[in-house]
Length: 289
Image 1 (cartoon, rainbow, N blue to C red):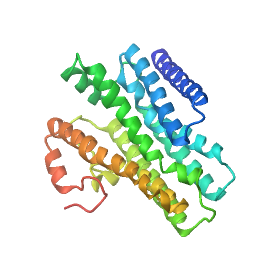
Image 2: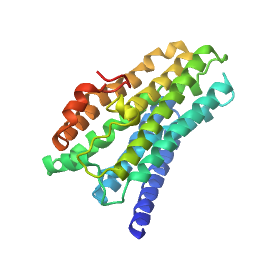
Image 3: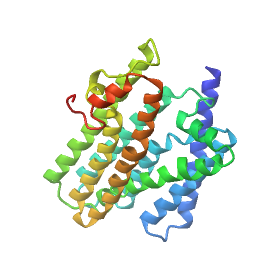
Image 4: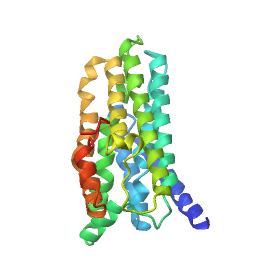
């Protein structure tokens, strides 16, 4: 318990220093466009987290950044122009972003076992490239996801700053998609957590509940969330259609990096996983083949 307390105090210190550093950086660049300010502050905060992760020799210190960062970005965009456009839309966007971020962060906190616990993917990269791991950690593990999340958060700008005046049917669609995304990801995470706690063997495959219809329903929920934010952007201002670069980039990350890594790991560790792969949808929950 003492070790876990110290570990979470380190996390709190890391993120306090990171976001204070980002705030101070933002003060000195107020003359820039908000999207540029957010990008620079995002990178500053990430570099601070990287320094702490190097000090404690654990790249997983960065993991909560994915879900914590967008909450601060959303709040910053909101305070730029809080009472213009549709306030109902802004409240929904802020609330859903906060709900998604806090739930995902809590899920991480429940499963993280302290400073000795590092994501298996990071350990793999560390073992494969011990001399170059600092470079992999900085650019691959930390800066790349930061940029991808930043691109995803571009959709927050029209919703919270350049928001249109009318709350429309497209907003209702966006709310539905985003709520569904949070629900799917939450259910998938809870079912997986229960399975891990109760399984009798590490070779056993999770194929119950929503996992019966998708090999990666948690990833599906995560991807869907970013498309939900993009739907809010379209409802706010169609001129910001180009923010689609965010959800597309995040979708590609999961399809071409995250999912193949997980599938390969499961194939190597669980003999029956190949059959499960052949019969079960990769991402979108669907009936068995």
